[in-house]
Length: 605
Picture 1: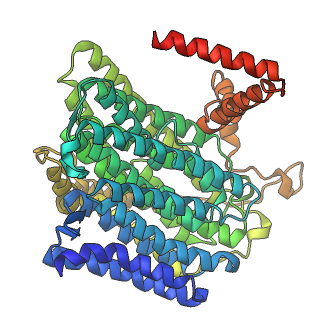
Picture 2: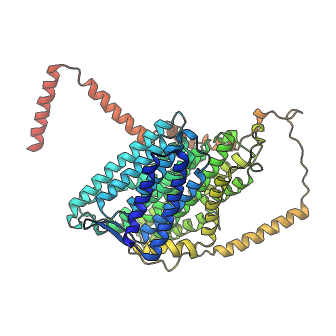
Picture 3: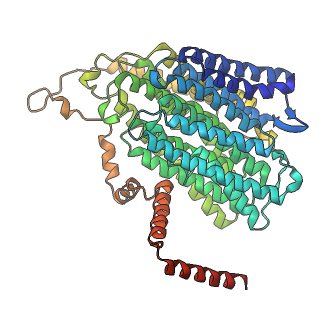
């Protein structure tokens, strides 16, 4: 029975998704919710009774360890909470498709994590990418099909690299017999480097790492908000970082140069994405770029070679899925109530939607790394682990590492600045008159978002006792690392007490000294018209026009850094060149044949 629990984690949501194809949406919604709750029950049963592996025809198909358990727990928990948000508010014409794709996605993600056989892993990994594309097609905007296509090409194209990398691994280590846990490749010869690079492309494309990240902001802007919180903010991050963690700890033996290259890519991902986020006027796209930026911290921690930073990278992966889903769902609540996600058109909604405002604020403080919320401690562990690793390096490598650390800290400061803009533009300032009667969102939506924001607080205050001790440290041990003896000089409970004391003193001083007089605002002796309202994004326009940032932003808007756009131009350029080279003249084709034969002879000489 115990081994069948792993099979049921994949089979039950797969069965419900298949049944939902035939049923009306209101029944499919109920069945999807029941299936999501049942997978959580299955995980509890696995905790109690075990279930290490599942075999079929004498071959181990699924296996379980603490690393996989970490990923599975948060797939089910986040899947359940986001599904709770989705029970009311999805447009009727896509509701049926949504509740078919939702359990399919959970099944495929569970299968990819549990897979022990390398061929089964490829199948489930590819299927999870397919449902990502199909969620993208549910978007109702004019640009939704193009964003879904871009997602499919980048993520689907990376699957081809994954298959080629695995094929090379099979060639280099045939004695592993296709078992993922049996591979351990040293970097000897070009093929091992190529295999690692190909798998790295797949991991980065899934998680949203530079330069394969550009699908994330577009998908975030155009797809239904529930699917954005579900996939690029949560499940795809879990899968991509899981693959990266397996690569650096199990599948390959890395040297210090490879570690530093990965850390550098992480730093570039972090800074480049947060700079783009600061310039966004669309709330969804701003959050999409931050979904990319935070991956940079994970990449730096996971790829560092430091046990403390590796644990911090896993912790930050978990924290990110929680606070990023909080932010997307909060924005989704605002969008559903106002009909827009454009920051220039919003403002002053804090009084109308106080619960959503508080939950957004918690998510913003968490992603900005403000103690005692959960985002701080995971970043703190990564910084300390990287500094600890720096002491082991030679002088040149130390400078390299310190530059990456400085970039990461700079990126954290820009994140805070970006979310000051986000909070002010939506909830503070002057409210447009058309939103005077806006009310709080439906109970299922604020309840789901509230659960996520509560996790931001709990995982911050009790970071050692709960996530680290129960989930992160066992996963670290599962890949052969020893639990770090020192997790850093940070006491979240003490921080809470000091914050409460400071807050109480501030309130007391305000009550004793405040003499506030409220008056109307006048422009030329008259009340200002609506068109003169100052939006929360105005200040950041000055940053956009600063030198040399203006040129960089101009290049970004022209998609010079977008691998999809650049690749498309190169591909179509070659296509047009070949079309011109084939005008239908027989003499020219004979010349091509002769030239080809001469080139072939020169090569084989």
